[in-house]
Amino acid sequence: MSHPFKEIKKNFGFGFMRLPMDGDKVNTEETCKMVDCFMQNGFNYFDTAHGYLQGLSEKAIKTCLSDRYPRESFVLTTKLSNTLFSKTEDIRPLFETQLADCGVDYFDFYLMHAQDKGIFERYKKLHAYETALEFLKEGKIKHFGISFHDKAEVLEQILTEYPQIEVVQIQLNYVDYEDPAVDSRRVYEVCQKYGKPVIIMEPVKGGRLANLPQAATDVFDRIRTGSNASYALRFAAGFEDVFMTLSGMSNLSMVEDNVSFMREFKPLNEEEQLAVKQVCAILKQQGVIPCTACRYCTDGCPKQILIPDLFACLNAKKTYKDWNSDYYYSIHTKDHGHPGDCIGCGKCEAACPQHLEIRALLKQVSAEFDKRELDIED
Image (cartoon, rainbow, N blue to C red; front, side):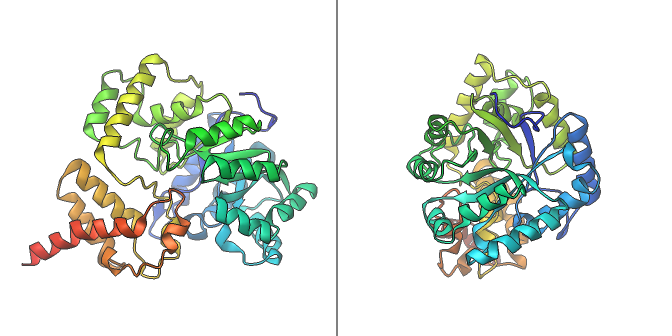
C-alpha cells in the first residue's frame, strides 16, 4: 500500500515487547545484535510502550537503538497507556519521561494505547487526545494514531469523533480474522472505510502461530516454503491497506528468519492461502485459550498470579498431553499465586485486549493442575 510516511523504509517493524531477558533485566547485548541485524537488512521501524517489560522497553530503546544510531535513521512509535495517568495534568510529564527514557526529542508515531469503549470514554474525559494533538502541533510527535481492541462499531465512533487520527494499529492474524471476539475483519474494514493506514499487531498471536501443534505443522510441511512464522506474517502483511506489520522478536534467530522473507515481501500465493485455512481449522479444533501473553493482566493482579504462563501450561497440556506442562506449572506457581488464589476482582479482565473471561479460565487451570498435584501427594 502507498502511504504518506516517507520515513518508513519497509513494511515490517520490530516490537520491543518480548525482548530477551536475563532475569528481570533486558539482555542488552543480544538485543543490540537483533537491532543491528534488523537495521542492516534495511528495516527501521520500532514499536514500544512505557509499560512494556515492566517499564524496561523504552529504556532498552535508548540503550540499544537511539544511543547507537542517528535519530533520522529510525522510526519510533510509543503509546499513551491507560494505567499511567489519572488526570490530564499527568500526561505531559509522562510524555517527557517517555522521550527521556527513549533518548529522543520526538516520536514519529504516538498512539492512544489499547482503545476500547471504556478506555476511550476515559481518554475523552481526561482530554488525552487533545493533549497528544498539542504534542503534534509542537513537533514533538510527527504522526498521531491509536491502537485498538474492540468491536468495529467502537472504532467507527472514535474515527468519527477524532478525524485527526492518521493511523490505526489493530490485531489481525489468520486465526483471529473471522473471530467475532476480536472482530479483526470488520475492524480492518472500518479502517478502509475511513481511509486510515493500518499497523498490524499480534500477527503471530504471541508466538502461537510459530509454535504449532504437529497436525498443523504437517500441513505446512507439505508445502514448506518458509517457517511457520513466515506464513503468519505474510498473511497479515498482505492486506491492501496494511503499511506495517509488527513482530515481537525475542532472539537473533527470530530476527534473521523474519527479515529473510520480509526483505523482498511477497503475499501468500494460492497454495499457501489454502494451507493457512487448513491450519486455522486445526487450531480452532484444539480448544486452547487464545491468550497472546501480552501480560497486561499480570501488572495489577493482587495475588501475583502469572496468568499467561498458567494459560500456556493448560494449552500445552491440551495440545501435547505430556508431563512438561505439570513441571512448568509448578515453576510458575512456586513463588507466585496459584489460580485458586484468585479473589475475583476482575482487574485482569478489564486489562485484557482479547476480552478473555480470565476468572473462569483460571478455574479451569486449577481444576486441571491443582487436582493433579493432590493426586500426586496422595
